[in-house]
Image: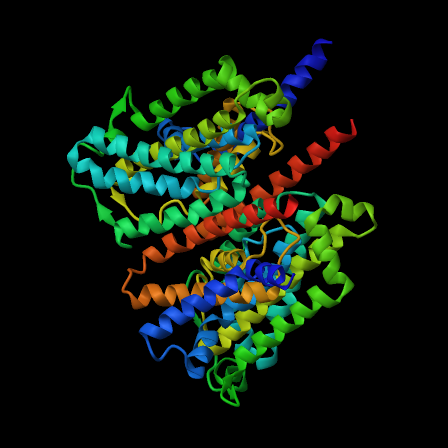
Length: 314
Length: 314
């Protein structure tokens, strides 16, 4: 009985085991790897993309996908820096307010008309990237350095960068929403079968729209972290972020078919991606091959997800 | 009775009417629009994406979708440029084969492992993008064979060769779709996959064949693009999927599958080409053009969704 339990646990945590094996493998070859300092460094590198991935996780569990996060990131990065030129608080508040509208735009189109979210957000990707390019005419803009705005990106609290703390706070908040609230449970129901969820009285359009709003808000938080660290903005900063986020979510083990997943899985996915890219860099694999690796990871993760689902249904 | 038929005919040709209206408006605004040179320009512009549209129309009628067309086109471009030094025919064949292999793998993954096409082709898109970057080493590589660009530059009766190739392909694939068993099977599978299986249609072979055709045509489009530009780079094809899917939906082919024609898809891409030409002639910023393309896709999705809903209630 206990043996079965352990086996099940192992099957459930495949990703975590792979991550641990990968980390062990590297720490044997490079002694610097397994220090606390390096772990904080790793989190520092991934906090932006991890925040976006956490928001994406909720959308994916709800059975949708948001391809527009990359171009929304660029747009909000620009908005944050221009607002910061006026006042620091605006630099934080304005991107968050606009993110709510962007999320509503994506979410309402997907849910009210019941259209495929991937194709809708493929369209809004183009809309927002056009807007971002139009906003500055394609050039880079600079904020005002050395104000307290920069503390978010550069400051430290007990040795840990503040943006990492913000990320951990957001991730924990989302995990609590998913696991402990009725809204979280509704996301899982809607993702598993939104038609029957609607029939039992869950307002699935509202739930799905909310996941899109949460996704945009996470992008806003990520954009503020990034702006504060860089104090510059360019209309192309977020190009490709959508694929990094989706890769992280999928290889973490959240099912693209909706209804399964967790924030912890996504964080494991983000770390796995970072470690794999770390390894590729360590072994001098050219940068160009990283996308090959990412694409293969997505396909392998999708295949293994469907396999495990098949086993589950039997 | 007669007026009803006439009205039905006109309702079917909405897109052509819209193109006509834009055309009349533009010919009043600009003297250049109605010249032979400009009309050839529009067709030259759409001939490359138009070839991909043919394959996408097959897939959407089948009830599937392919997001990797842009990367497959880029792969075709790169392979054509790499292999054209061994002869023009070798270059052309390499591009087509590269696309076909990628499409075939898509088809195998979707049918044999029962994955959703949208997720598989999303992975394939990232993967092939990496392959293209790996081959070009993130540089722009020029062609060396002077005979190769003739594929795009030759003119027959003052009409560029790509346009003639495109029209031949349009007719050939329309016949394949409307007049052969294979074509009828595509409609059957798109209409109802389970019923088709019971009728003894080899559903999986039909689906694999369509994915391969889509890959082949994307690869071929890449070859023509390579001949036109005479360089290859990994940046090619980023927005192709967006444009091509918009064109097919704009032509009035529903994402539900089971209906449509190549001629309809052609109308869709012609409208996009005309709109693009209009925006260039009116000197609208390319950033706004990008936004318009995205908005167009979202708009047409919403209209498609409303139409599907109407049909359900009747």
